Length: 431
Ligand code: HSE
Image (tube, rainbow, N blue to C red; front, side, top):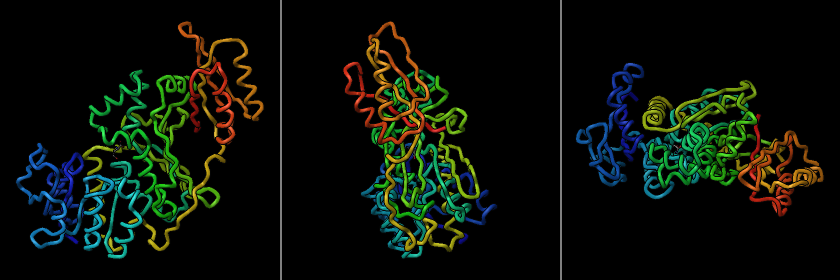
């Protein structure tokens, strides 16, 4: 395919950057690939919004469904960058696939929730549904797994898949600000919005992305329910500072692996040793480590969000459509995908960081450690910080490896003691 006709639905940061990129780089794209990308139709909520290209040069429709046929002509590729999980995004993508039109989307929420149905339709109709832009913005993680290392046995994928939360955690540390203050700042900088922030902060956006990676890596059906999800709402500046003193940074880590024939997919805050490059991935960057039977540590880091980085991923999908006659959008044939049982992570052994705020009186420390002794929990380090301005002081504890189920039951007992001021902060540690 040398001439490729595309329609774009959604002209926010990414959609607008894509049109701009296609205009700016048309010669480069043609020289490198022989490809002419023609934008034959555009649609977005607001035609008159100021954009970095001249909208009058393009055929415009108010209703994105009209992009399915432009003057009686079907596009080769429908680019969906509207971004709702359901409604018009889903309707448009499903209709396009049903009409044998290839689709490129950045919509991870839609794919995590409705991917099984949509990938099935794509395969049945011999078209592609590609989504490089849906995971980690400009980092080419989908093609890396699907093409480059597809024949490796993937042991584990882990990393930072959400730029907004990484920006918040990094800035809380560097500017000594509270979570709430940095969230306002992140919204002002355009990293997130009122609507998106719930998905970002709650860990759901990262879990949507991880859902797609688990399918690619393990041939599992697209199953959002398999995820264990915890956001960063409860992380305080105090935790960040204490973690730093102990040689760690707190990061929202998404990870998936296959344990005892079951799928483990988790997104939660973790303490990461400063020796680990992931701990030094700052600002709104994303980073992913893939461990396989052949590659110990494949590390990819880059811009996980934003107009041009994400448009770069969309463009790579348009290019893939131009040359691929392999209609397996998820790498695996749909018939090979398996619904795996969820691994119960309470059996996983991990080290923990605990922050316990207690009344500063004799006997408190020994009482707490006696509960750990009873539960056979081995303490690695224990620190107590005096505070002349408060009758409550923080005690920090790091444990040796322990099953989370056993730790949680001791935590509950300790939280009920009358000298304990608030819920205990418990965060797993990765070295
Ligand atoms: N809201 C996402 C993030 C960007 O902050 O990473 C788009 O995936």
